[in-house]
Length: 148
Image 1 (cartoon, rainbow, N blue to C red):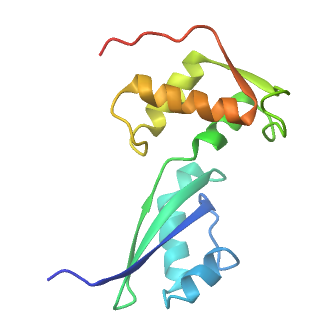
Image 2: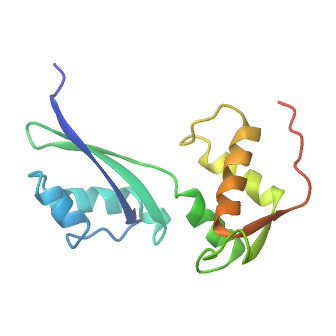
């Protein structure tokens, strides 16, 4: 028999370093979820991605048990790491802060493809390029045509 789902919580936590302090503690504590048990399981599952910001979707049930799914890091975080900058531009249409190549965009798109709402690598690359544009990051080169 399936458990009755009571709700979901979406958080972004650094991998391998989850602790009961905010935002984890208050979000889980208000739902009656065992905070320390979540932190132990999350840290064990994400220790190889330590320090990276990871989205996590926690499904909690009526009996106060929970399951969670760890997703890939957000596109914006991956673009910041690839371009080696601390933050995006305050005026992305006027002031560009970095450049990335289409090869970098392809690598990020293939990594993030499982979480994106698209079916082809080309459309995933366009989504990544759009995020880069809104951050003030220029994508250099010509868009590669991919034959799949």
